[in-house]
Structure formats: C-alpha cells, structure tokens
Image 1 (cartoon, rainbow, N blue to C red):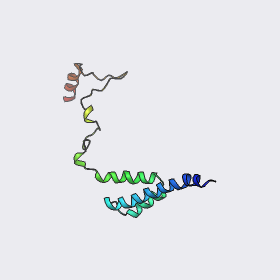
Image 2 (cartoon, rainbow, N blue to C red; image 1 turned 30 degrees about the vertical axis):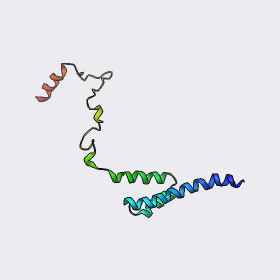
Image 3 (cartoon, helix red, strand yellow; image 1 turned 90 degrees about the vertical axis):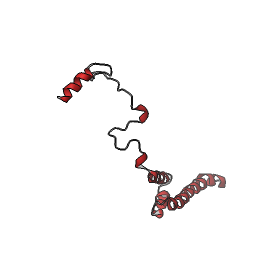
Image 4 (spheres, one colour; image 1 turned 45 degrees about the horizontal axis):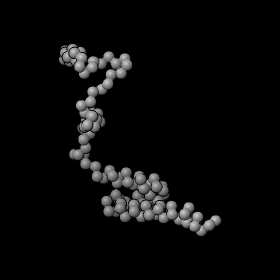
Length: 111
C-alpha cells in the first residue's frame, strides 16, 4: 500500500481525533467542566460523537432560566406564534374564532 494512501486513510483522521481530544482537555478546564480527564476520556473513547457529547454538555453551562421565554408556561409556544388561532379539523365540534358559541360555552363553564 502506498505511504500517501496510509497517511490519508489513517493519519489525517487520527490527527483530527487527537486534536479534538486535546481541545476537549484544554476547554473543559477553562469552562469548569470537572473532572476534565473524564471528558477527555469520553472524547477519546467515542470518536467524533464524544466530542459532540462534550459540546452539548458544555452548552448547558450557559443556561439562564431568567432569560428562558418558555419557563413557567404549560405549553411551549414561540412568541411569534402566540396570537395564532388553531385550525379546525374534520369532526371538530369546537367553535371557531368568529362563532357566537364562545360566549355560550363561557356561560356554561361559569355555572
């Protein structure tokens, strides 16, 4: 087998793998994901996917519940879709937006 082919097939992916492992080791200590040897081992033992696991775990560190627009709501509705009206489906007996049945149902619920 040609030496260039071996470098391309083995050397380059191995260099990327070791590079991602080194970045994980350096970055885990910098952002405070402890123990950083654990994250380095995960990245080393699970090639490529281990690095993505580390990245997803790292992104959870910056979560601020005060800025979460969905915190404390029963339904996760994007603010841009908050004023949308649900479309009726076949067999749906719910009143439409412009129907007068809304007032009748509200009166029944209050009783």
